[in-house]
Image (cartoon, rainbow, N blue to C red; front, side, top):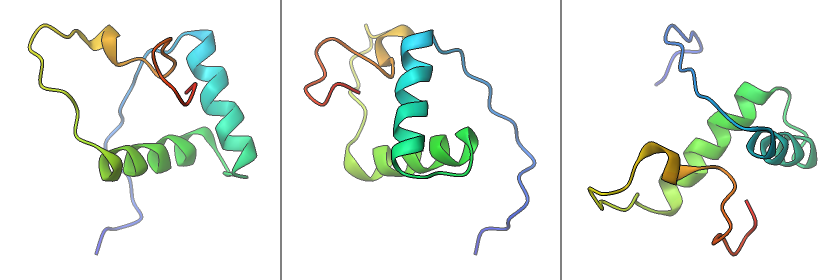
Length: 73
């Protein structure tokens, strides 16, 4: 069973559009914090699909908001 202590910090860089998308989702889901929302989104993403394994993709290709995303997130 996972403990409730969090000892590892993960830092990411987001642009304003990505941060706004996360905040909008957070508020619509009544999440208590950005961190809680990001953890929930990570869990949902890992459950929903595997990441593409194209070696030509860069970290910037995995943005939160993408023009080719049919869900708009």
